[in-house]
Length: 216
Length: 164
Image: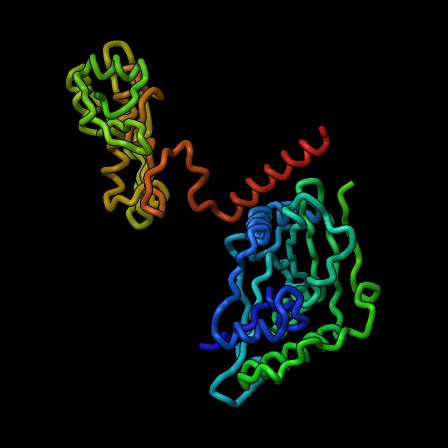
């Protein structure tokens, strides 16, 4: 049975094929299966990420003196059912479970670790943009008004926090790639999906991303 | 050959009260004294007056806390028995709290408090496995508790970074 729910954590595969090439990802989704993770390093890194998520949230609270909603065990999954408004029997949904959301829904909080949480990203990790903007897309389609995200890069030696502002152009770009992916998923034809999509034309880092906190 | 590796204090205790391996059950190889054995100790030592007081009973939430006071010669001891879904799977939380409170007081009165595990020191996890309560990290912490713990851990990491 096909996987007809596109999760924001995999938007980077659906849109740009970052970890798994797009057509390979589609092949797994058409099978209704998840690509198994067999790489030991990747498994350990994921577990480290899970282990330190709470510390990333604690860091966020320490810096901004505000406890976000829907954190840790209270995380909430937001779903946009039938996001293409299709009349067909089979429809595709988008979903997202952010690490936290500020109480007024203006800002999403997402925690990421780098290389077993032993290092901080030197530069902003661009490959997370599809997930970050995907979270904004899902929440806004769910009736909220998210204006930005804060990406907490937690490591045991220090942390950085970037602010990513809402960017309609990038969200339009992402939506078009997700739409292409969704249609290919519904048609069941791998050929309907371009393996290498066009890159975003603007300078997203210049337009919408800034470092707002860094441990000295 | 004994089933357990008893400590010196436990061996002396067993000898004094004629307890054998049958008076214990094994939790990860360590001896945990049965409630019946604690009762046996109480009878042998003439501990008759164990006073129980209800501190909290909430049938709906299956929470029970009992206070037990006991006297042996000129020694008086007080302890509490707690029972709630986080530390027991029992359908009888009040009976469990009573049993735990009594066991603790009896063992304290005979000088074995902290020297031997009783059933009040072990909890059954959701996986169905028994664990010693002092080795269990936490059971279903609330989000606030989890965040407070993470904040404390974060501070430790930051202090360690400052030192290095």
